[in-house]
Each structure stands twice: as C-alpha cells, then as structure tokens.
Image 1 (cartoon, rainbow, N blue to C red):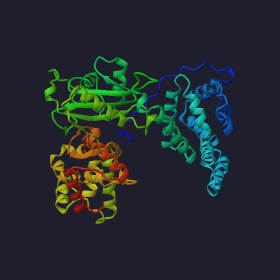
Image 2: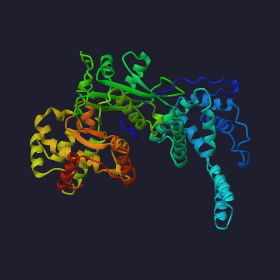
Image 3: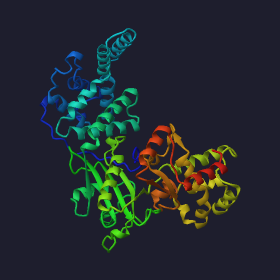
Image 4: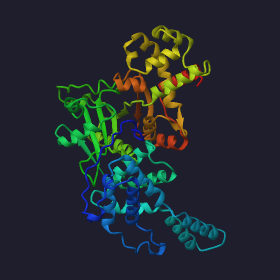
Length: 495
C-alpha cells in the first residue's frame, strides 16, 4: 500500500442523492463565463455555504446551517469538470475559511497569563478549552455538515482524493492546503474507524458488481481476465474487503490471501491463471500468504484501514483453520529499481565514491553486458530485457540481493523505512524475514524492483512488541538472512 504501498487505485464514487437546489444556484463551470465570473461564483458560494463560527458561549446553542447550503456546495463542486477548477475552489476554501489567527493569539495570551498566576484549575481548563475551540478551522464545520447528507461521507472521500491529486500535480499548494488535507484526513479516520467497518469475503458466487470492482481495484498484480479472477477467489485462496456502514458492499480496501504449505517465494505460482481442479484439502494448508492489499479509494490514503484488515483477516482464518500458525506477506518492493538507478548515476558522476560492486562482480557484469558497468547496467535495468540473459541474471543475483537488503533495511525517511510497503508491514509488527530473487518475473515486477520480492512475517505473539519498538525506537526486526545481506553490503559498498 502507498501508505499501504503501491496498490492504490481511486474510483469515482457513486452519485449523491441530494435535495434539489434552487434554480438560481445551478452554476456550472462550463456556463459561468470568463474565469473571473467563475471565481466570483466560487466566492459567493463559499460565503453562503461555509457556516460562521459561533461565539464560544453559543457553540452548543447555534442551529446548524440549512441543509440546502451544504447541498449547494456539493452540487456546485460536482459541476466543476476540470481538475484545475476543483483545485481553485479547494484552495479558496483552505485559505479563506481556516483558523482565525487573531482569536488564537488572544486565547493563547489568556492561557499564558492564567498560568503565571495562581488560579483555580477550572478557570485554566476553560481557557484552554476556548483556545482549542479557536483552533478549529471554519471549513471543518462545512465538512461536518456535509457528512450528514445522504452520500455526504462518500463525497468527502472523493473530495480528498481530488485534493491529493491537485497537490501532486501542483495545481494547489501551500501550508493552508496541507492543513486542510490533514483536518479532512483526521475526520475520515474517525468516520472509518474499525467499529464502522464490515469485513466481507469475496467468492465466485459474490455479486458480479463486487467481483468487477475487486478486479478493477487490483493494482499490485493486475487481474488478466475472469478466469484469473476465479482463481483468486477459488480453492486455496481467500479475498476479503472492508466496507463502511454507510456504503455496504462497496470495497474500501481489499486483501488477497493464498493458503499454502509453506511461505511462498514466487508470485507467479500464486497468480497463475488456471484454477486447480481438486477441492481444497485443509491438511495441505500450513501458511497464509498476504500477497496483495489495495486501497480502492484514494481519498482514504493515510487512514489506517490496511492494518485493521490484516488483523481481522488473521482472526477469520484462525476460526476457519484452527491449526494455522504461519502468516506472512509476499510483497513487492516499489522504488528499488529507481533507487538503484539513482545510485548508479551517482557512481557514474563520481567514480570511486560509491562502489556498489566488487571487482569480481564488475568483471562478470561487464562480460555479460559488453561494456562498462555503470553505463551498460543503467541501460539494461531501465528495461526488462536483461532477465533474458541467464549470464547477466547470475552475475547480478549476489549484488542486487545485498543492495535490496540495504534499500529495505538501511535507507530511511525520518528514521523509518524509506520503502512504503516495508514501513507499512513494520508498523504492523511484522519481521523483515526473507528477500526472494526473481520472485516476480512480470514486466511490472522486473522494471519496478528487478524481480525481487520480500516476505514480511507475522509472528502473532511478537507483533505488538515489534510494532512498539519500530514506532518508538525505529528498530527494524529482521531475520538472519536479511541482516547477513545488510552486513555484506556494508563490507562491499560505500554509499
């Protein structure tokens, strides 16, 4: 998942069922005339739709804004067909309807003054409560009231997806926008907490609409056809998803599981097209392999759904197979090829500064590629053609295994694993257990991670302690194989 790793795919949500709006407010971007007219329409809309923050003393006595005002915002926003127009509206909302900084300064000064002189605890607590109230941005009230509309929560999920897309495309930027994204993420995290989520299993007899959505949302290992989909929900396979109580049957995050005799080291053996002819034999099942987890709604990125889903699925599998004790992922390593190519580029610019390969490996690779290592290898790794050369595959196995181990274990972002999939599983308390050579021979696997995959193993009795150690002290629990490869890298490389 990208937060959950690479398997993220956003869908447009179902249309909202909202009350009709007055004809005078039926504004559409294509009919608003020049850009200035559209911007004026946006400002007018926001003045009408975003509720005023009532005085602290009246916060529980002020009536909610009319439902139609929130519906106006939803309808107007839905009529903006261009991403840039939606970004403009969201930017205006973030900049013009956030926190009243004057109020925050005034209330902060009041709290500081009270702390400097002896006062009753109740007086100080109320002052702090006033400060908390002043720190709430005005647009939060709009989001809160939209959530009460029929289909309003789904609308806000899509709105956040649009906001994330606009930020990625740099259509809208700045601290106010980032703050609004954070506020919306926190609100969605509350609405999509585990108590509101339903676990559902997908089988070949599930509604066609659900099977179609599961197929379309699979971004880690794309589904080829209906026979492939049948295999993934058939014998020795399980597929589960979370839906929300407000949208029953609508997949939010999907987990695919393979039931195997041992921990899988190759994805092609799991996602082969033809389903087995024999019925499922429980005695042959000793391990559960999580081989794909995909978030179907981009607007829920960063909301803790994948972690909850894995925990719920483990309990479900233990009910079905009481003897089952081995749980592991078979995960892609997105970003490894890009990181490796970047390291090769650095080596080419500064010879001798970052030796990635031993002298013996350089000779072997040069013999297989027919040219200088840094130049020819960059060209080969930029495509998938190199896997057709058995000689080059053999020459690259040892160095790429240790480089991959370092990328997963040693490369950090703010002290945590740089790789998003590694970070996800390590946060869950898994152990970085085994790196697998040529585990994904697909075009995506070869170009994205040089065909390598990794098992993150879940020792259920240790996950809580491992998670605490990783989140608190940034310690990565890894197996002897991974640590041995890391040690080899440290001896042979100078990144």
